Length: 201
Image (cartoon, rainbow, N blue to C red; front, side, top):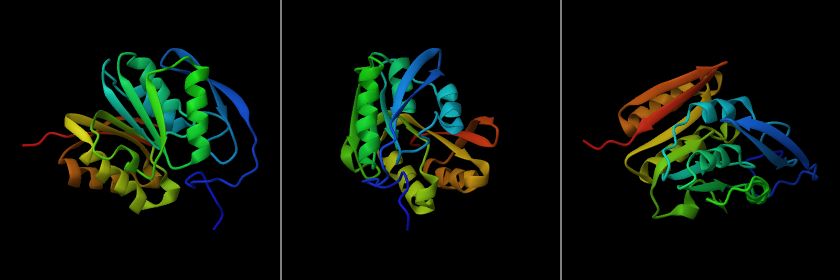
């Protein structure tokens, strides 16, 4: 099996580049590299999630599968008094996300290598964001949802972006099983933005 971005140690030769993107009114610069997701530009799904997500200032936020950092760093920009924890299994992505936090002058983040949510065992969050790694398979995506539910505070929300043709209906069904209710808060060019809130009866 060839390696892809959902690999702990990508074997691809380095191909570092700097890209820029305007996200929620701020111009970000990102260093990307071969062996990480969407190395050439911030992907459309991530942009759609960033445009839709609501991050109250002061929130404890978790970005699962952060890649080189666009979603988590945009969240940190929106909540300067909050703290954003960013996780990825890919060691190269983790190093890039740390580098990109510094590059953009963002200090209210911490970035960790993690298989799903293993690195934040025992911690809870107000908001969890994910553009899940579809190529890793449905079992991995559903594990992200299950572990996200366990790591959300009461009234916390999980925000997910997923393409309709890549499993949005089954993702929504899994989220409904876990959370009881899921809202589609946005759709854009085949991408669905799903929000599931943890409200215990």
